[in-house]
Length: 253
Image (tube, rainbow, N blue to C red; front, side, top):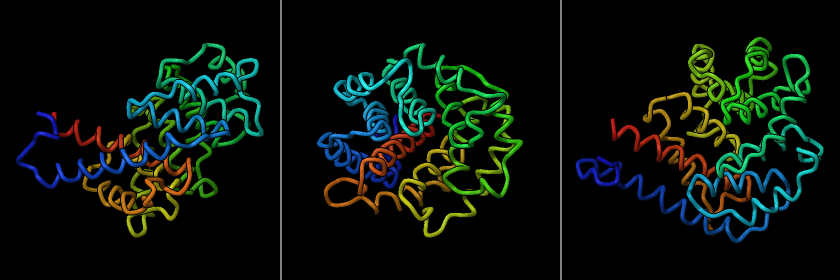
């Protein structure tokens, strides 16, 4: 039985309707935008993909900006991984991109940087390419310096995409830490809050612990349908779809 037709749970159905309405407004706003950076284009493609919307023009634009298997920006590993993740949603990934990402690994990490390493592991994980060295580097080096909500969320997401069961103890511990840092149902910034929400959903945190942040997120939507800018809007759309999918999976159990 699908969640939408579960007439014994009016509150949940109302919640789903609110999410769909917010998403519809957000998607309408997003489709009017003209993203220019690799980050904005990639996130836009990812959000549109999750909501089964066409992104053919943006995909063509993103691919046309690629050079020799990667995207040449100030943060090439980060942006190439983001582009790879976005294209995976439409099965448009090219093997040369994955090869380039793997070739950039030095020892057991990427650029000796937790963000680059996390994004690289996500991109590889989406294509079922395991990288134990990178995962263990993140866990081994995790400490107070990385104890920020956004950074921790990216690391959790990377580990789950690589092998959530293998790293379950670390993931559960850090997910609890993230919940302990929540204030007024959010994590200060919309973009950061979305990264946390997505990590918590992937980590299997109970719906009751996530719903306050979803309500907080819905309350941050502006009258024009956006969440202020392209990044915050696309991340919000991704979070809402992930949460909706979580609710549907619960109802089908």
